Structures are given as C-alpha cells and as structure tokens.
Length: 120
Image (tube, rainbow, N blue to C red):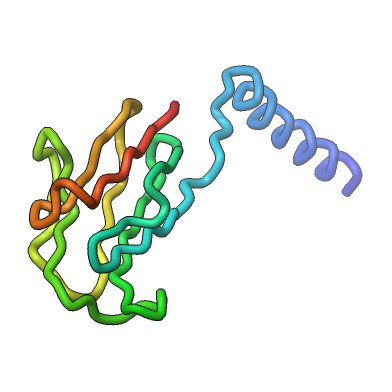
C-alpha cells in the first residue's frame, strides 16, 4: 500500500512540475460587469486579461438591471463585435487577444465610451 501511495505522489509531481516550470498554470477567466444606462457606461475604463468576459448590463434609473428609455448598443470601434439596439438585457464579449479596445454606443457616440485594455 505504501508503494502505491509513493507512486501516486511521484506521478502527481511529474505532472505538476512541468506545468509550473513552463508557466502553464493560468488563472481561470473572470467576468467583469459594465453598467449600460441612458447615455453612460460605468465604469468607462476596464482592464482585463485574455479570455476574460465583459458583460454589459442594461440598467434603469435606479442603477439596477432593468430597462433604459433609449436604445443602446455595444460597438467596438473596428466593428469586430457589436450588439443589437437594445433597451434591456445583457450583452457579453470574451476578449481573445491582448490590446486596447474602444467601445461606444452607436446611438450616443459623443457620450457613451469605454476603453477595455486586455493584458496577456
């Protein structure tokens, strides 16, 4: 029985050491929420890592999930992703590459901007 336990321990180390040495252990992707209200995003800057998810949630006047009076979109400046015109609900995007992304509402381009910085 002792030999079996030692074999299991050796096997666990054989798997763990190369993963640690190569930096293969990556943190699990996270989800970040951005509030989308009438003519604002909150926050207006967000830093995330590759494979993290950003979820835009439409909020009412009380700041809680609900309906907005006006339609809003989530539109990336290079049009690599965009939502439909909406007055409620959510929209999510998983960032697959590092970089800086400018996102705006197509209906309110002067007022509604957010910059998402994606790190490796």
